[in-house]
Length: 354
Image (cartoon, rainbow, N blue to C red; front, side, top):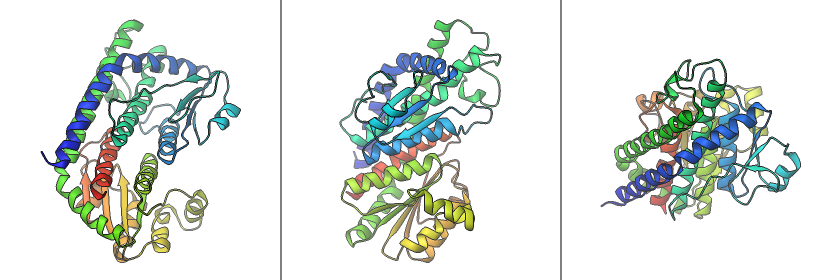
């Protein structure tokens, strides 16, 4: 088997085993979380290491900014230290600690360790876990209210539910089955992404390695949840001893550019400031159509940076117009699954660069 095939096989096996074992626990946890949210509780995510901080921020943006029309915004906050959580926590709050422990007395949203020794695989399965919490907690809001769980703008999230089902035990069983279905979905999408993109990732890794070995820097960017993935890219490459810069990191720079020039320029102006002919840029976009991403890719090419793009849907303008040197496409329209497969893609890229 090739290295890429081995990496895919390890992910497929761990994904299947983990979510088959955790399906019932996830369903019960979503039920508990829905009650706490309805009583005014908040989800407090904490990550102290660079990679864990990216997960904490990913949790916050996914719960606060639901990407599905009609879903309620849920209060979630990201912190970098457990003592900050201890200071800010209220009685009905929930704490999700990605490293370390939740402060005493807090209700802990505990994600068990995935069955893998590979830190990249563990992070990918953890990301799917908290995406499932966000997706499936809404089932319990809707079943407890006047909406039909199977109706509305987000009905595609819950194809497993019977509109007539009201028994809580039956609902929990249905949600558990959904966990397994969604795990199978990301397994198939990860296979598509890594198989179809194998040659692209290999070529990108070779060119990126050459630039980094010569002293170049990898710039990373994305919007929303993809911004937290850019954080993770930088954390992973720095952990491997490679130069990397997160263009989403500084809110003062981003808000200054957005306010004074416009949101389309939030990354391109940083490319002008930080990028040069020996550098590289990786852009993460679930749609492939974000103007801020496209503008940055165009500017990077002008300045001689090698460019990599991980995009969803059919690749959007980034793929159609050839706006990046290396384009990895995740063929889905479901944003959480796209992000999970993209995490596998950039983790494989980091592994191949070495």
